[in-house]
Image (cartoon, rainbow, N blue to C red):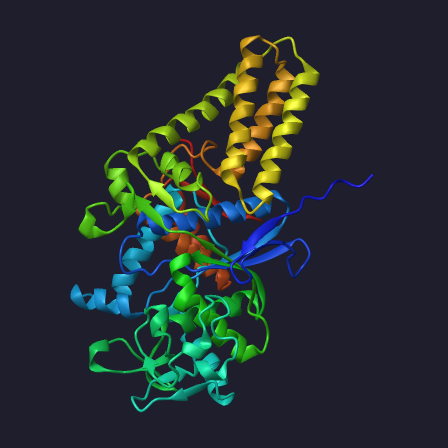
Length: 473
Ligand SMILES: [Zn+2]
């Protein structure tokens, strides 16, 4: 008898429907997630998106898929240029600072690293070629300001993701800034001709002196690492328009192929019931919360525990509840280690079957985490009852422990996340070593390994990516 197949479903923003997930290549998933714009510390709204993507990736792996994950770093755009100029720091130095901060924060939140972290400034050539293709196919044109624009009326599918009505579009009028609203849908800049406001930031290319628009960055980098058509593209709902809509237009116009099969978007985050904004005094970066002594595992759990398509209300009360939940899990895992009871095979195997089925079915249903967690905590209560009555044998307890470890590989809140935070220096070195390895520069990679060792950090390259641990003194 063949094993029953799970049926993984995701809500696809493209069709506004829950769809059966079927990757292009059997057992493999290629996914792209819009990464941070490194002009400031990432805030908890950003981390809600990154944690949802981490949960998605971990669940795909739990279900046996090999996942190739690309997350870009936007290190040149309107915001980074403005930030570096305000602080009178060269762009590269300015963005490196926040890139490093991002990697530290992601490690603190136990987010599994992506396979590739391409930086926009290192892919100008790919963007130029993409724009050249669009020019050759007449989807793009040069404006009188010397910038190159995408002609949205040439692409009949424009609006298919955000569902804006194309007949209302103002075609022929242009928008050069990276961010704008749906009502302002116009021909958008692929390449921005140099103006003195750009200061030192420009590239001399066959397209002229200038810099890329934000949207073209993600099209060029995603297709370079994942191919012209890939399985999943994620991001916050606020990026659906114009960013993702424009990514589709650029990519599909250039290749004539479907760009992405499944688009997954997470909803906004609120704080204490209102929009998070500096002017409301409720704006938090991860660092702000750590400074208030919040445990990163608890923050992780809280941000994960609401379904990604629901608006999430971050509260300090919620953090307390999340802390309690992690303690219940951790305490049970500790208790299981000492269990040596009389055993009750039937009861425990029924409970194990049930939680595996319920947790699995819920997660397969578009990552329905609230239902999955409810079944997990029913299980925790039932096992505690068995332990209270001394009804769990050593072997049974080990089985339960292994099962909970599997679930925690998905949740990432108990495990060996002993708040082993990487020092800044270590995070940066690991990232540098990854870049060296991707460039097949084994000599540099080995030298960095030695430098890390001197800091007491051991790195291992596994099939799932690089892992680090502290060397026991
Ligand atoms: Zn993007």
